[in-house]
Image (tube, one colour):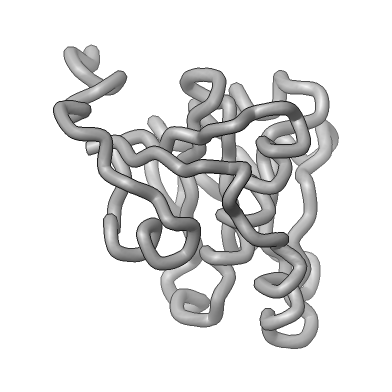
Amino acid sequence: MDMLVKLYDIEDSTSYLSKLDEGIIIKRAIAPEKHIVVNWVIENFSKGWGSECDVAFSSQPVSCFIAVLGGKIIGFACYNATYKGFFGPEGVQEDFKGKGIGRALLMRSLQAMKSEGFAYAIIGSAGPKQFYEKVCGAEVIEGSKPGIYRNPIQ
């Protein structure tokens, strides 16, 4: 199912960024990093997410944020990739989960969407639902399954 976020109600992402372990930074990816980021997403998640991430690099500014530690990617989040106004995909490297990185990436992305003039964001095929409800107040959009991801080619 998809979920809806009221961007005009979200809190500033600064509090989430300040809670990250020392050395972890959240930054907007830049064009020269495209091959590194897209390959990392494919290797750690899926080719489909890699394709969505690739599209995020065609936006200006790039609509992909990455979490970096010691010069290495440990997480990513995209928006406006598959459809305008959609957040996702997002992923954090398994051994870094539970450290607030996913929250920081989500909130930084939603903040960017808000500053680009969106009033709402849709989290496509959202999971885990409780994470999005808690962090950004997302609400389930009834009747949205399978949503935009119906009839995928194989």
